Length: 350
Image (tube, rainbow, N blue to C red; front, side):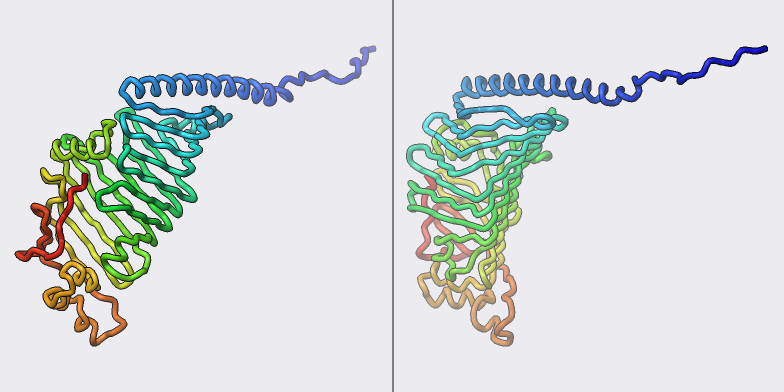
């Protein structure tokens, strides 16, 4: 008679039950170790960069620096950020720079105010509600810098022309090396300010409406900050043959509009020089200020479609841009076509 097979349960291994959790724990430990290695290398790279900047005469001070951001980011935080080179000093509020571990060459920075920059003569002070900047780089160097600020306010004192103030709803600025003009050390700059309030512009053009500004320019010989005063930096740029190529500069202030293209530089007396092609509408106040309210200014405004006849048939129509004769800045004078504009003398910028 055959014996019956012994009964009972087969004991199975629990390895596969716990394996996913063990694997996750090992990955977490490995990632944590890797993050701290990256953190330490970031600190070493920062220290090396600060030392190199100091040797070049640029002193950066990151107060109460700490590095955080675990697990996927690297955050460098300064409670305040200061800069000094020669006579130029700058200070910012709390500054935080963030980069993703897997995208280290894209850095997002948030900076708190106030801003103060001075060379001992000219002082720039600024504030804002939110200020953010992004820097994109590659193995070959800088690719682009972008800046955005909400409710920016700025005051400039110490200029020969007196104090300048301005504010706006939002500021945006983008800068990149011009890939086709590297020999000229050219930088492309695009900027815009919405709902700007600029008292000097109000006095010049007339009206208290907010102004929308847009600029698309290329700056040549923009090879970096040398650490001198603002006047020294401007003079180095002038001697290097630097110029400002204005691809488009536009302003809209109520019914007043202006668009400008051209080229500007500095002459040997440090005055603006060059030629601008201008199209405008509604600039009766500006023409009157430039000509001292003379009849010639009124006639020029009517010929250019700025006067009352331009909109007589349609009183509520928006003025159309009319091209003005070329505007020349030469030897301290401002000329429109063959005529020198009276009561206007261009002053040295430094």
